[in-house]
Amino acid sequence: MKYIILFFIIITKTYSQNEVLKVTYDKVFNTSRTIERTTYLYVQDQYSLYQENFENNLTENNNDKLKEATIVSSYTPDISSINYKFNSSNNTYEYITLLSPSEYVLIYDTVKLNWELTNEKKVISGYECIKAKLKFRGVNWVAWFTTELPYAHGPWKFHGLPGLIMEISDEYNKYNFHAQKIEFVETDILQKSLAEIHNKSVSKTMSLQNYQEFLDEKREAIETESKGRGIERRVMQRNRGGMELIYEWEEEERK
Image 1 (tube, rainbow, N blue to C red):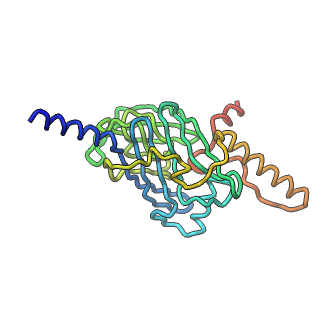
Image 2 (image 1 turned 60 degrees about the vertical axis):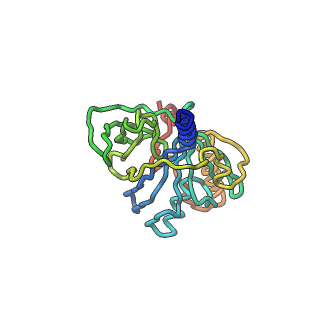
Image 3 (image 1 turned 30 degrees about the horizontal axis):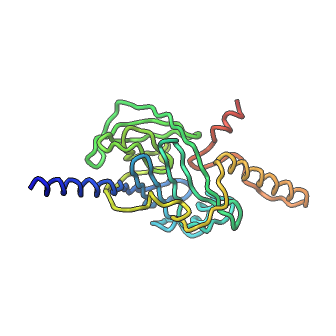
């Protein structure tokens, strides 16, 4: 009987080691157009993968979908989803985007978040949650996390709290993420590279700063060329919209 119990414990432990926490979030963006979409977070140990499919529960039309997709790249991307892979040991996110119409690159972004914890609490889906505040790249955020699920991860680029992020919104409620399902699943998605997930070949790896500088230089070149040929062409300015208004290296330049 003792050996049967021991065997059961070993099998149970092995099974649990292969399990991955999967959190389903409702993403609601109340911007110039409303976007409602289901997104997913997979977590195991220090790794997580935030996955968003552009085809999943879109409420906007195809033109709006194209506009959103081109935020990720300066070209029309042949990518149906965005995947942010995170390693908490070095606070680095990785994702794939386009450098040219036919060249995919792996971008890495080291993100350090300075959270301010509060004493405010509320219950979300049966979990007691604590309120935390954050200013990240020009946007103020309010998050609710639970220590009952001790995973220092969350949607998009949010991480570093002593528990799973259940809800997070910016101060104007333009950008909102709400956890609506929490489960443990058997999947090897965290063992796959981003190139395998996207089924794309990556030509090089770049830091987010180098990638943004590349885009800025390309916009300036297009503008200069257009002016030289007497063509008035509207080029995107450096002032950004969305969830990242200014990067830390740009803030340093302004000091």
